Image (cartoon, rainbow, N blue to C red; front, side, top):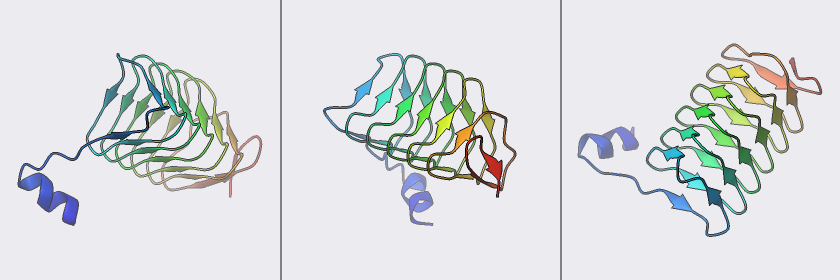
Length: 131
């Protein structure tokens, strides 16, 4: 893919952070991360390459977010959440503190995740259930 070709040629993708976003100085961002309006990334959070942290979303303390994840508008996660790769968190979804999410997961709008989730599933509802 195009990204792989650029990386092989030592291209460093810039991060784009809106001036109203709050990113803790102790948070770590990979390359090509986009942080939009009023998003908050708290202390000791790690955001992998090519993630989108969308408007008014919150990544709490000590969260680890893998590569290629989209955290939609208003999505919130408690502390110590771990999200693997290539996931989509829907608008206003919520993840309880300490949750682990696998890869290739879609979390629907407004879903409330209270249990760990394996890879390759779609979740909807409150509490979130596999669709």
